[in-house]
Image 1 (tube, helix red, strand yellow):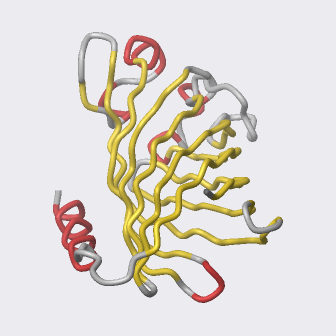
Image 2 (tube, rainbow, N blue to C red):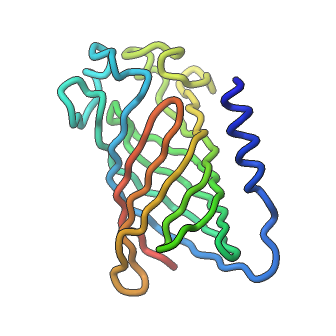
Length: 187
């Protein structure tokens, strides 16, 4: 709990209202995410049920993802709203929302904090891992909510013309880490 309060406090330092001249950018991002679930790294019996494994134990998997985002910039600070649509570790469709804020670094890279949640199919996940081990909250008999609370570090790798970018987006939390290569269409 103390770690969550500390992270929330750190986020509030960046959560200022953007004033003056603002720049808004919307993007559709198609990507491939590699993720590891920190709570499962040593439990091969659980992670062996995962699909699209990059390691034999299943502790590292890849998932296709579509992200729709709106980025608001003022000077070097940003606020971003992102809708997430992806296939989870059990190869089940999932979606979520993330709000992030932080600072844009030299070269278009970003460092900030993310807060949000995504839904999962609770009935299927309960067959593989306990709710306590998976760190989700009960939303209904069939849905669970997994919190997103962590640090993001995004790297702009290169542009393809004026409308396309290739990026590496990283997310680090107490529950899982994610590294996603995305092709972004900006509009």
